[in-house]
Length: 636
Image (cartoon, rainbow, N blue to C red; front, side, top):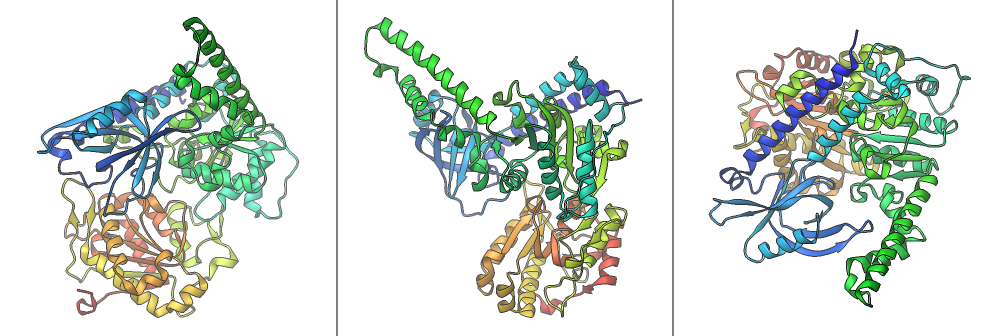
């Protein structure tokens, strides 16, 4: 019989291993002999120049930092909300000094980073040091997230609330989900399975799961389920592990006219969602002008005239009025909103203290560490999870924590152990059926069906949906970057660029522009992505469609799709080593980004030792074509 308390205790232990692993890795990277050779790597800007400082609408001290970089930043490096620290490096690289404490990125622009500082003392310290030496900026450890997760696990274990205990035991204990009877719902714009999923959400007393493979309309279904829930409840919480995921579903709700209050850093939000951010709506409140004037006075109390006692009395009244206005504005913002949206970690923000919700929706739940989910679950009576555990998993860096099961998500646990609460969406609206067939068979028991409107879509009637360009007979080799685990394959990158040029010529530039055909270039390795970006930038022939070409890692393409996807596999060695290409969920993401054309470039001999790639190659040979380029055809 499952023991929920023991399970949560084990998660707490694994989190400690993960934090310690990240801390040791961070300290190792920060040592002088390491950092001096890494000043141009991802996660570091050096040197930087300190610019203007000011306060944002929530009275946070912000400093602008400028830098110059010849490289395009890759995804998931310097992002708003990430913790950073400033450091000083001696001229000979022998000394590293951390300046002040950890602060957070407020926003990122072209050549600048706006950083939220701890206090004025830190700003003074930074400016003093910057006058005499060069200062750098480096990503730090987000210990706040670990603290939130540990506190959430502890609260989930010690809770004496009967409703919560019942929910906890249903999610991870011995209890099975239960359902009430509701009148049948029917939405003409949803397909039959999507309608069933919404029905299951409405009827669930404790938990429902919407399992949405690529292109099956998971967000559409969740949006409808939220709106239908709001016909029965005053307010719901919508959360996700990432800001991008929170924004996406928030946008869908806003477009349907649902009043959303987005909690979090507005600089991490899309322009559309920023309109409903707590900070923006706080600043737009009619009482904010008075509050801002009070805050300005409190920051410079010397402006208040009168004797010492009079000034103290005046300051006391100002603070009381400040608290009164903050409370009123906060209450108004929550009262006017039907959906409160935030990240899972953001659900522990002080703003949400004492707020409770009948229903919590967690989108992209298969990418969320289970401890992060509990931060939000503590505020709810029932939970609806949406996602796909066959796509990108949550990031776990510690091998020990990974072996212990920290990478196993709450959603995957429910799919496997409580199938009665799960609805699998099966009609997909993205991929040509030939592209869809392989992931459907390997990951979804062959249950996916291509909608008629996409099943036969091709870029050109003369084209096929699948091509593998085989490099096995070519003298290619992978390279590992020094001081890094990333890899690249220069010859394969050149072949990809030439293949892209040839494909554009075959389809015709005019046809591509007129039909708005777009391209996604994907590689599992950051080093290869950097290399491909440089090479593609140098191709004048591609200038007319430059904006239609995106180059990212697999993680950077999560949630996106393109008409044409080209994947550079990189691995090419006699030992048949494929590294983290063994993470098949990532390859599922890469393959299923394609709408009409999928091109894979890689060494079939190296890759076919793994059964996944052996079956994939056989499928492409049957449904598409295997191309073996000749050495003399390759670019120099």
